Image (tube, rainbow, N blue to C red):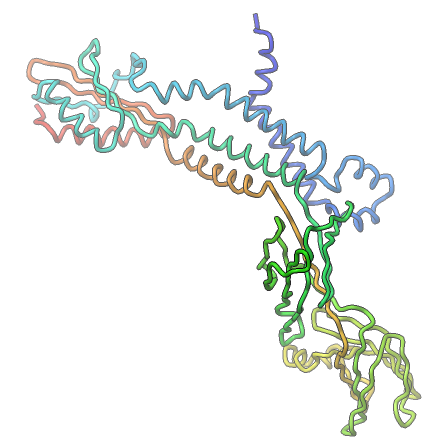
Length: 460
């Protein structure tokens, strides 16, 4: 008759349950990879049928890793691992502690000839030499009497019995860290105009979080490649408490700053709209005319050359730097083209680009040539801030997981049993053993051990 609760115990300690849970978690991770999550999910949801989008929302597929069902799967896996470990650990401990243990009656039966040594030394004398030999690489030597003679037992690698539990503990630590980060972590962004400060962390879909300190962007700088694409952008930040600067430092991409329990990353930047731009233009080699312009402004070219309208302004168009789009209306027709501030560097990096892409040619309305210099612009920096209390647990769990896997797959618990039988002129030595894994490796080691023993005495 089954004991009360044995059904629940068998269910929780089932390897089949582990496989099903791991498959379900992997499937959930695939769904979370394919379907855009959190902020990116909004644009994706707009493209879906409203009924399908509502279904995805109800199933929490737009935030898989924080969903109730995904956290529930992780929790059930944790329970499964704990139950399996508690159920199997006592047996592993007994195997680890038992040096001699019960001897398999067939252990010394049908041994290959190379693992049998016959010597003219008596068993006691041969045992002394064998113990000295085993002491070099084996541990926990025990010598006992056996019905057939003298038995020497030794072992090594007993710790490998616990490798699987180290793996379990590592997985549990990673699960705990992931849950702690998901439930108690903080993630948001801060936009700070150059020269100004902010103490409010904006969080997507959640209330903003006031900080106990303020962050001031003292200076923002950006360097460009020859093509006009941004090369390096950097925020020089000051952290203030009570109006006093308590920490300063540069923030660059992949070079975060830790302060106040948060880690700050350089995310992106932008240029405030409404900044004045300086446009220069000249007819041929005539003296250039300069004027400040804004989007929507119109002005006449000298000599009834035509009317120019500023259609658009971009701070970093196609990652090639600031640019404005102009429309010129004249008796020769209408023209539209972009004027880039970094046009010379763009031409050096992309020879022939003006002929290939006339829309980027500032001299498209010949013989007039336009150029752009920005003036009065103000950058703003975008910082990403995170606090993940589970990160140390995840890191520790990953280390334990790797250590446990190495222990499981590269080490084995090996036990050697050497039986010395007395005979008329010396003794017969039988070398046998067991291993928790890698029986081929054990066989080779036992043969080498027998060969070493054979070299210690005279073979009769």
